[in-house]
Length: 285
Image 1: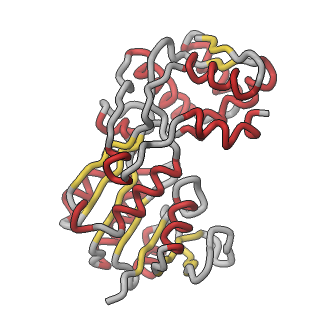
Image 2: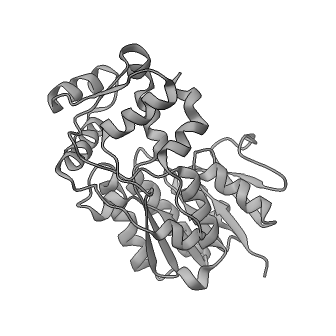
């Protein structure tokens, strides 16, 4: 039986590179899209099928004939989307599920990690063969600071001197491709995916200073001020709360975790932040 891999979240910075890598490996791929005319993430012989993770009734057709599933729920209601997708995967008797979760899910549910916990429980109890990926904060998330870097040459977050080993989303995609093509080796495993170096926000600012050629500072603003800024920007209060909890955990040292899982799985070191930044400096200019 030929494998058919369904990738959800194929338009994002993990799903997109994952689809490209799987296509390059000559595998049969299907992607889920709310818009049946959407070909933005498709390449080669990729199938595009209409479906909505928020609507359980749209997913059985998307899973029909699928043997392997990369499950990425973009939210905002991650628990609902995970539940809908995993329920459809059970009905389709998928032979492998690779679930993208978060390192925060095992660190007291910090930040968005709490949203992934219900899906992990459902998957473990489903009886389906599974592998769970626990990545740390993405390097791409530092682009959220681009406006303040441009306007004030500063990063305003309440992270103190806490450290995080940021990960390149492309590394996550490469790990996912590896796991999807070596299911016997990875069944029932949780991989903790981090970058190679724990960094304070001041360390990140120093890299930006070197690459951009001008001084960039980290200003450790109070949490209340940070909250007010996020609310003013239009971020919904529940997401503001997640951000506050995340940075409180960073400041307390809870997120200071470095693993070798990426290197062990890919037989190469995880991408460092400076290397990533050199490739994406235009995003901050």
